[in-house]
Amino acid sequence: MSLTVALDVRAELGECPLWSVEEQALYFVDIKGRALHRFVLATGAHRTFAMPEEIGCIGLRKGGGFIAGFRSGLWLLDADGNCTQKLADNPEDQRTSRFNDGRTDPVGRFLAGTIDEPKDGGKAHLYRYDSRGLETLAAGLLTSNGVAFSPDGRALYHSDTPTFTVWRYAYDPATGQATDKTLFVRLQPTKTDRGRPDGAAVDAEGCYWTALFDGGRIQRYSPEGRLLAEYPVPARCPTMVCFGGPDLKTLYVTSARTGCSEDELRIYPHSGSLFAMPVEVPGLPEYKFDFSA
Image (tube, rainbow, N blue to C red):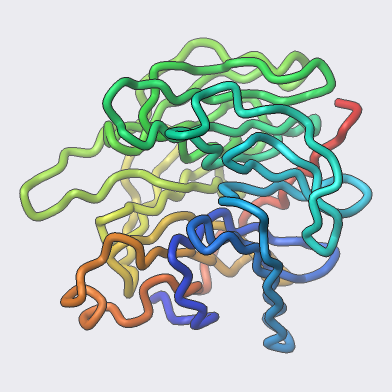
């Protein structure tokens, strides 16, 4: 199995790929390019929706449209990408903080984390949003990333990218509480390998897939945290993975061009593109945000 270009979009900072089972379409964002993309593999149709500010993450919404994390806060979007309602402000200093990675939980709550752009004070957080408002699940972070759930919804995975660390929590779908934080994976950087855990997804066997930003590859870990496999990506900075296709047996990977040197872009000319490869174990369908959760 190897990754090939599925869509040569060359985003500045592609992120948050999300498969819609109903539409058989893939959505993803370009954070720096301030865009939401929709791609239909069967027809090759590609549509871009301009966003009013940097958009870090999206979740499918029950009844249609999306929930999205921006620099300013969490918003509802309609099916055409228009902002229709602000749900919550970003409670941090928006000059140096924006929403980054996010995912909907089994009940319909939205978990979204922020990035501390100066990365000098651990000011980022992981939040949970539901009908009660915005609540903190984790603090003291540099870049909140890698939110994913086990197949039964009772384990929450979450990474802090600059610390090369993925954590695992016991998660209670009934209450949305995350407890019993334990170390899941800690990567060991070297002078020549600065790959660090970015966006992630879990497959039907409960294995955790993560994109290694600045590492040029993706990895698959067992539920116990054992490295099972890794696959090179034709980009230095893969950003996030998701499962799609009619049987959820296609792995999609977004990537970035931002921060790549001219030499690196000559070596990896498709940086920023959307990549894909077939996999044997299917993924899990995405949960949908429920405003009443």
